[in-house]
Amino acid sequence: MPSTPEVSVVVPTFARPALVTRAVRSVLAQTVADIEVIVVVDGPDEETGKALAEIGDPRLRVVELPAKGGAPNARNMGVREARARWTALLDDDDEWLPRKLAVQLELAREAAVPSPIVATRLINKTPRAEFVMPRRLPEPGEPICEYLTRRRGLFHGDGFIQTSTIMAPTELLRRVPFTVGLRRQQELDWTVRATSHPDVGLVIAAEPLVLWHQDEDRPRISLSSPWQAQLEWLREIRPLITPRSYAAITMSIISSMAAPTRSLRVFRLLLAEARRHGRPGALDYLTFLQIWLIPPQLRHRLRDRILGRRAAAPERQPVAGPVDGLDGPQVPGLVDGPGGRPGSTGTGADVRR
Image (cartoon, rainbow, N blue to C red; front, side, top):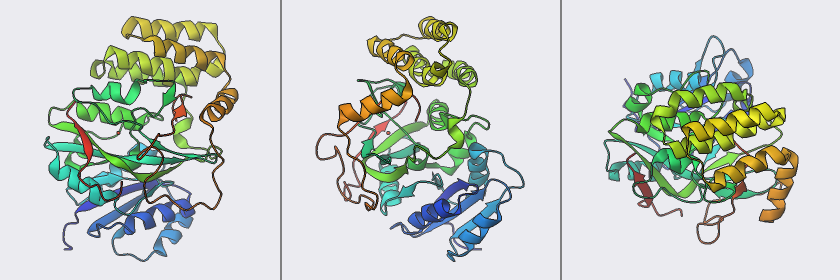
């Protein structure tokens, strides 16, 4: 029996062999070598199997599911296979910088709670620009749900967590599995449910250690979801979040999904929902109005003009040192609805609930 690895890495994928091999190679290049990589193929996919076989690293295991069940189910299946105390998650179209796991393990050892969720900042790479998210770390005593959902300006990414940044105890990921069938806000849903347990807290590394590739023309499984289903999900988790967070989610995330209907009835319904069960602030109302009144394409153009973004160079190499805002101003992204320095291993924010 091989020795128990220090970290298990779970990568769900389907029909994207070039992307998943790039993701896996970024894991195998980690400075922490004692790992296992579990790629969960979400249904029969011969091409992906062939591409992964060419990597030829004994730390890589491939689990092919008999039928498609979606990314949350594939993650849960991978966690069941994990042998390490810690499990880190990676989406198949993202990459890690080499010291990502090393920094997270150091923060995990220093955490003040028995079961820390250790996340990192990331570099959001779009066809037009690169910028760091989240722009700030949680403040002491700040509810995690409010950190992840409330804004201090008209820009998303103020507080943020994304799947590829998460490392957590394997036991916790089994105790609190991802919600199968949820198409959007999977990370928010899981983090809110996990941090409702008294032994769990969120720790976020101050440096960006993940490359989040946002190809805005590439379809993503998480982007096709009716707003009604997302509202039903929000109502289900209402006991776990604050009224301020409930209002923020209703008036930004769900409203951005519903706004293309251009329905006055839906506009009123969501406004009433936020007011009845939440505590909207001035920024929530302003965000709500701009989502409903400004078409998405125009919002994107306004965002780029306001932020003065430069088109990303097509052959630019991954950033390995200080990036936007860690040594100077960070570049945020305008709220459009749904999309926590190398060498500083000891820095991060630790929040219990």
